Amino acid sequence: MRHFLLCTVLVLTVSGTIRADEPFARYFSDATMRVDYYHTGTKGEERFSLDRIYKEGAWPGSHTQLLDTLNLGEFLARVYDRSTNVLLYSRGFSSMFQEWQTTDEAAAGAYRTFEETIRMPYPKRAVQLTIARRDKRMVFHDLFSMTINPDDPTVVIKEKPATPFPVVPLMVNGPSSEKVDILILGDGYAKEDLPKFRKDAEHFNNVMFSTKPFSLHKKDFNVWTIEVQSDESGIDVPDKNVWKRNALGAQYNTFGSARYVLIADNRNLRNIADAAPYDFLCILVNDTRYGGGGIFNLYATTYTKEQNKDQQWQMDYVYVHEFGHSFAGLGDEYYGSSTAYNDFYPAGIEPWEPNITALTDVKNVKWKGYLTEGIALPTVWNKTTYDSLEAERGKLDRLAADYYTKREPLQRASLEILHDQRFAGHVGAFEGAGYAAKGLYRPSIDCRMFSLSTVDFDPVCSAAIERMMGMYTR
Image (tube, rainbow, N blue to C red):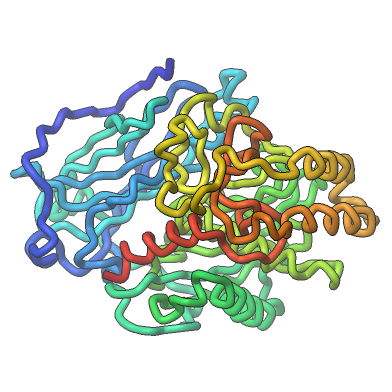
C-alpha cells in the first residue's frame, strides 16, 4: 500500500464548478500564475512544499476550456475559489518524480527532490490550489493544498525576469487564447550553433505538421522559438564523463537510461520560457546520441545531430513520438527496449493512458468506439516472430559503430510484419505495450507510439490528440 506524507492537506466540500458560459474575467485577470514547488520522497512516500509563486505574462490558454475533462495524467491540479469552493480550473499532468519512484534507486529507499510547476490563469481573489494523485484503482486523492492570495506582495513575485534570448515566432495562426501554443527552445547550442537551431526548429516543426493528425489541424497551432544560447555545444553525457555548460541543463542517462534526455532544473527552464506564450514545451538538444524524452504536460526533448545520414529520419520519429507523450498523454506502445522502470504499470490495473489497456473489461475496452467491426479481442498477430527479431535487435550495442548495419535486416523484417495487410488500418487489442510483452495491449499493430518508424498515429492515438486540441482551441 502506498503511504503518503501530506503537507497542509485541507478537506474541501465542493459546492459547484465554474459554468462554461461564465466570463473568464469574473474570476481571472489576463495574466499567468506560476506556482513552483518541491516534490520529495521515495518509493511509496512523498511530500510537497512551496518554492515560489510568480506573476507572468498574458494567459496563453483557453478562456473557456478551463476544466480538464480528459482524465489523463498521474496527478491533477485543481483551483477553487476560496470563498465559495467553486472549482475554477483544473489540469492533469505527470512528473519526473513519479517516474523516478519506479526506479531501483527509489526501491532501495533513497530520497530525492524534484522541482515542479503548475501554471494557471491569474486569479482575482484568494484561491485554494490542490494537487491530487491516483491510487492503484486510478481514483484521485488530494495530497497537497494551499491558499494563495494573489494580492499578497510577500507571496507572489511580480518582478519581470530578464529575457536575454530572442523570441522568434515560427508559425502564428491567431490569438493564443484560441490556439495551441508550442514553444521550441534549444539546449547545447553555442553562439556559433544558433543558425543550426533556427534550421532545426523549422525542420522539426515541418515534420510535426506533416504527420497526421497534426497535418490536418495546422491552423489550430501557434509555434514560437526562443534562441537559447549555451556556453558550449552539446549537453551532458554522464556515462561518457562528458559535461557541458548548457543553458537548460538537459542531460542523457536520466534514471540510468543512456538515451533518456530530461531537464531537472525546472525553475531555470520556466524563467527562460516565460519570455514567450506557451501551452507546451519542446526542447531540441544539440547532440549526437539517439535520445529524447516526453512527460505529459511537462515537456518533450529530442536530439538533433544524427551522425549516420541514412538514419536522420530517426530524429523526426523521436520529435513527434515524444510530443505524443507530452501533448496527449500517450503511452509507449513498444515493449522490447530496456527501461529503468520497475512495475510502471501494475498488473491488473487499467492504465490511464488512452492508447494502452490491460483489457480488464473486454466488452468495454476503452477504445470501443474505434474497434474494427467483428475483430477478435485480444487480436492475434505474428507476435512470436516479431519478438524473436526484437530479441536479436536487443542484443546489439546501440552505441557501437556498426549498430545500424547489423540492425537494418532485423528492422526490415520487423516492419514487414507490421505492414501485414490483414491488420493494416484495423483497430483491435494487440498484445504487447507499455514495456510489457504480455498483459498490456495497444489499439493497432503499428503506430508512431510503437515502432521506430515515421508511420502516422493510429486512429485511437489520433483521436486522443484531437481531444487535447479541443481543450485549447474551443
